Length: 69
Image (cartoon, rainbow, N blue to C red):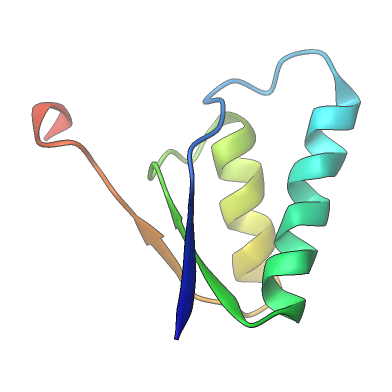
């Protein structure tokens, strides 16, 4: 089992190339059979990436810092 941890913005910002890059990364992870570990946000670029990986049928693991619980 391979995993990669990605921490990216919790805001989408105004640059559409960042959104496209997050979706491209999701495709690469799924094609290479790599699970995503990420910052557990459902918003911003983190949410875009996680949603894209999930939509492609791969597992994601959200990590929430203890201070945020």
